[in-house]
Amino acid sequence: MKKHLLLLGMFAAMVLASCGGNNTQSADQAEADRKASADANKAAAAPSYDPNRGEGKFTHVDIGPLNAAMASSGEKVYEVKCASCHKLTDEKLVGPGWKGVTTRHQPEWIMNFVTNTDAMLEKDPKAQAMLEICLVRMPNQNLSDQEARDILEFMRKNDGAK
Image (cartoon, rainbow, N blue to C red; front, side, top):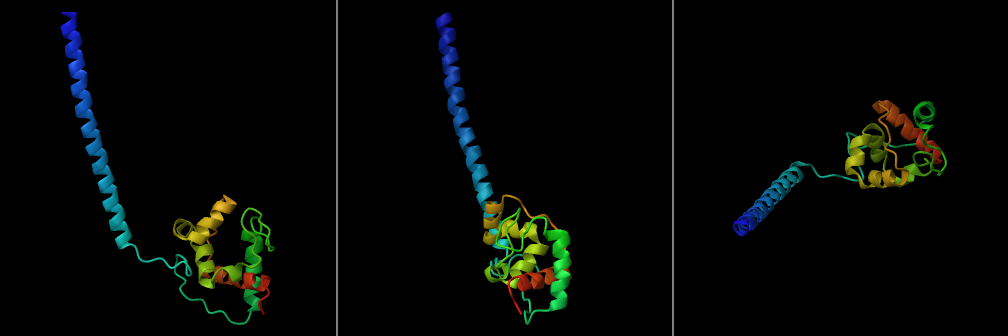
């Protein structure tokens, strides 16, 4: 009797093990197929990304001779919202130093980054590389378009624009 119960138990265990593996595999495969389909649909619906422009509304920024009034306003914004994390040299504080920033990035990219930081960190390879170095996400400073433009002008002044 014990032999029969043992054989019956072994047989039931084999049946359950063989059935369970196939169901798990097909469920895993179905989930993988669903995810691949969703990713393909998302990629097809997303507009192309321009890493020189960044992610945001600024598609063209007119740059001419340095505007001293805008640079002065930008310096005031820098002192209140930026100086605690960014130095005006190339030295990293919390975030990267600002020296040379206008030679490394396009004006549109800078303005989009300072006004739309989260989206840039999600999509932009340059922003993601900076995050890997700094290890701290730049917080949203809620800059107006004019404040962003003034900061850009202050960055240009800091880089020696005339």
